[in-house]
Image 1 (cartoon, one colour):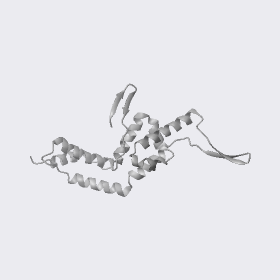
Image 2: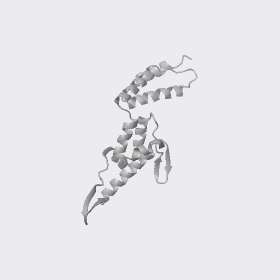
Image 3: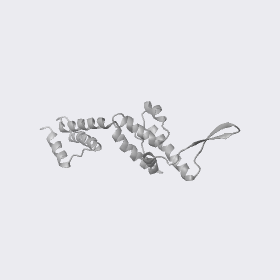
Length: 184
């Protein structure tokens, strides 16, 4: 995530969801929302407490449906936060998914749909975890790589495992790093 200093404080670049990187995107988008305004992330986690309800009445023998708008300052703030969170979520999606997710009426249901679509199910996460464990076990370096490059590759695997709930002890990580180094 890139940070830029401005006169009004700190702004961050909106993280765009990339296929296969849902877990990292969730971490980044949560940070982004919290930097912008913590209430925005609260809307995604807990939903908007104000819901527009249509009421139908009879006037002169005709049915009239009215949508009520927020009245109190709190209702207006809740609605504003939901609209902003929903808009930011849409902007964080790749263009080809904009129409698919635009149909969701609020930020909480939209985020749940994004999770369902991109987060995968339990079987997918289990397969991903198994694959990453294999990459960790079979990790090796070539003599053409720098120490930084080797360490960064290994750390990326370990970080992705941690996101999926697999914690590797520092001692094991150090041992794996040293044993993967080329004999040179």
